[in-house]
Length: 192
Image 1 (tube, rainbow, N blue to C red):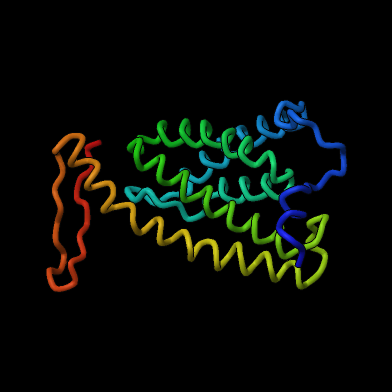
Image 2 (spheres, rainbow, N blue to C red):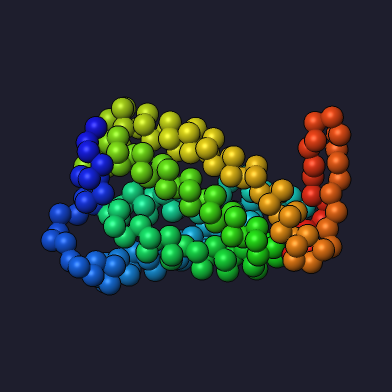
């Protein structure tokens, strides 16, 4: 393992640092590619949903965002995330997802990709390569287990947040108490 300062400073390339790295044409091109790939991936993800449920069997934008973060220097990750947001917004709005749900899903997806990319950059030496069993094991542990586990808490906290927000914005929601002894509630109708 390496010090955190080395991880933050370095990317996959060894070109000289520029004060305005984010204005570089390579970063702009990468951001444009992320935008296009994220949008197409989201459309594929919506095609893989079982109606009427909004949850997809497979959500390719998470993988696309993770790959983009692993292939770019840490100092331009904010540009990659900024490029993915309009694509996420456009794809979700076309599928009639409520705006606050769009924002929370993007935060959850971004957190998952950031957790995996950050842990992989910390645990695997430069350049990030998956040619050893140890590296593949690290990737599988963080991408398939730890990050989804940690972000599931963010996902689980969304319904109460949405019910409170919808109540304050429109006052047109209702809560169905499933089992009073466990105090679980399910939101029956969002009208944000």
